[in-house]
Image (tube, rainbow, N blue to C red; front, side, top):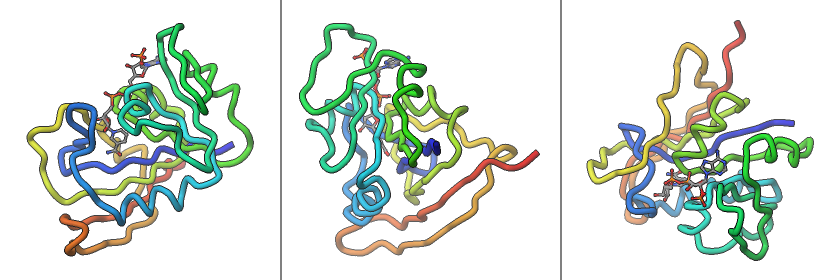
Length: 163
Ligand SMILES: NC(=O)c1ccc[n+]([C@@H]2O[C@H](COP(=O)([O-])OP(=O)(O)OC[C@H]3O[C@@H](n4cnc5c(N)ncnc54)[C@H](OP(=O)(O)O)[C@@H]3O)[C@@H](O)[C@H]2O)c1
C-alpha cells in the first residue's frame, strides 16, 4: 500500500481561505485529476464540503468527528486508524485539507506538491512544514504562468530519505 499526499501550496505553505482555494489553476486541476483518477481519495469534512460532491471515478473517504454526519457517495470514517484499515494495495491519496494533512504527514510515503510561486496573505489554512531532513525532492517540473494559469508553478514529488 502506498499512501501519498497531494497538495498545492503557496510560498508560505498557504492552502486555502474561508474553506475555498486561493487560486484557479486549470493545469493543476488536471494534474490532480490525472494522478488520482481510479484511486482512493481521503479528505476532511471541510474539504468535502468545499468541493460539494464526491469526486467522480474515485473511491471517496471523508473524515469527520461528527457521528451524525451523512453524505451520499462517500465512505464516512471517524479516525486515522479506521482510514488505514480501509486502504487497499494500490496508491491512496490524502487530498486535504490542513487538518487532515497534519494527521497523515507522518504516515505518508510520498508527497505530490504543486508549488505555487506566489504569496497569499489572506490564507487561513496552511500545509505543514516539509522537513527537508526527512523528505527529498525526487522530481520537479516547472510550468510558466499563462492566460489561464496566473502563477508560475512547480510540480514536485518528494519521497522519504533512507536513513
Ligand atoms: N491547496 C490544496 O491543495 C487544498 C487541498 C484541500 C483543501 N484545501 C483547502 O483547505 C481548507 C480546508 O482545510 P481545513 O484544515 O479547514 O479542513 P479539512 O482538513 O478539510 O477538514 C477538517 C475536518 O476533518 C475532520 N477531522 C479533523 N480531525 C479529525 C480526526 N482526528 N478524526 C476524524 N475527523 C477529523 C473534522 O470534521 P468535523 O468538523 O465534521 O468533525 C474537521 O472539521 C479549505 O480552504 C480548502 O479549500 C486546499
